[in-house]
Length: 141
Image 1: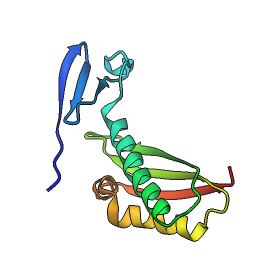
Image 2: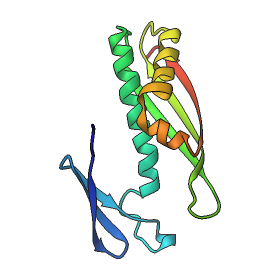
Image 3: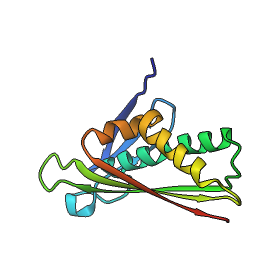
Image 4: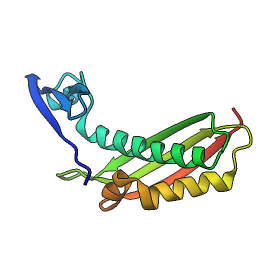
């Protein structure tokens, strides 16, 4: 069974240091309009980054195993949140920007579908409360 861990420690104001079980650390903060300094990642943005990273790793692995000539991959994620607390994400848009001379569109579609429907745990979790839509663009770059 896979596990994970994280802890946050108050630094000052509303800024925290997040220490991940892997040894990586970074700052968390809220916007100045919410009493923070803005000097750190916002927790809800990290959910979007987690989704982007999760699906990016999947798509990369699937395309490489398919021997596709992928030379670049960027995943952009944006989300709309509910107006009322707990202000969960209600709609999330995932855009895959892929580069590679001769990339197969069918292989790209398959990789994205496998990530979204089978492998990406972040997508499965967020998809339980938000509508997730995706699109992709392929360039020869």
